[in-house]
Image 1: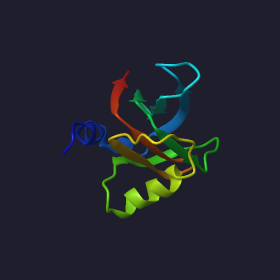
Image 2 (image 1 turned 60 degrees about the vertical axis):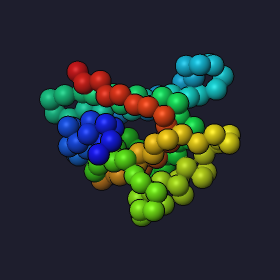
Image 3 (image 1 turned 90 degrees about the vertical axis):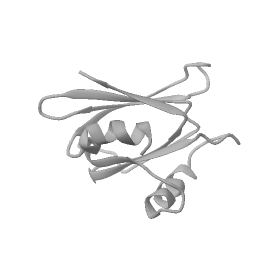
Image 4 (image 1 turned 120 degrees about the vertical axis):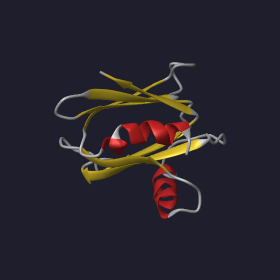
Length: 124
């Protein structure tokens, strides 16, 4: 299991957490987005997941209410990976591909795929 998957597992893959923030910024160059931050909360905690070295991101079906079913790393050859690739294919990108892909499976609202090099979770 990858360190990213282990971290997501510690938070039960954010099952039934609410997604309330999506922030995109350029760390290396302000004109070229390369970082995505997701803000989440449940009844007692708040966390942010920061993805760095982002090469592609796809977001669909977001609304005022976004409840996470699970955030999982997805592996080539799996059905969830193919779902992520279909979403990522519609993203603006260059030729470089990042090492990891996560997919936010929704109970209600946004489904998100992120292709990235590294991540960290900050819990409050």
